[in-house]
Length: 331
Image (cartoon, rainbow, N blue to C red; front, side):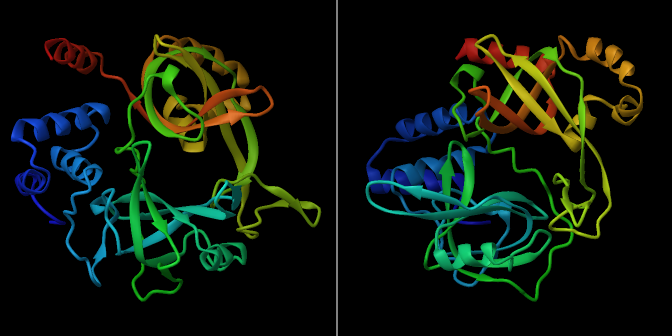
């Protein structure tokens, strides 16, 4: 158990802020509603306490935590994880400072989380190629922040990175969508992670591109042959990309699914690559079906529109949706 129980958290908020039990429980209930019941009651209590500046976490010292134990507000913590993906280093500038920021996707057997690097020394390790995908690293003295309902691990200048820890991680759990906020399409903002649900109203024929069999990234021409920059000896194979529109009654948005996510929607994608005419039957099967998608909102610069990059798919259970609507009406 990390930190306190639900009852202990509520009691500490009462003592430090002088709020009544009903006031605190109302805040926790609202937080659960805002996060679409994607976290536990205890997790919502942690967030409420953090927003009220009530310190509830123990001093972790040298303890190494699991990713599913991380909550917004935690600080000075240690984490061991495998690097799944490294994102491009970006430059930023504002009235008070300018610099670079880097990020990567880190995972262990309990889940995955985005790690954000602010210190130039840490960013240099990425730019020099000293941090690679599939590498196990140990991060010390980091802190956790909430970003649009999505947990992020942040590394400032007090943090450190062990690039070759004795402990290693083999199996990982990619389930990092469960803490995303469920939103209406009309309220989606660029660069945020979210969960949306709706009806597929338009689909486009899948396309295929040459990609690395190890990491799935698009292959480039190296020495007059296609290869992956990160895995030069890996096989190059065709990977699918699928575009379609989702409508939730408030608006619609174009979704883009890659690789294994396409397989969840189109089971015979390999056959369609050979015989595109087979997609006509799949098109009719998909139209009108309801799904829930988790992912990231991005801007398509060419067409000046928002798009949604899919990283998790679930079929919508109509009975559960109906029960949820009844509960909302009762409230």
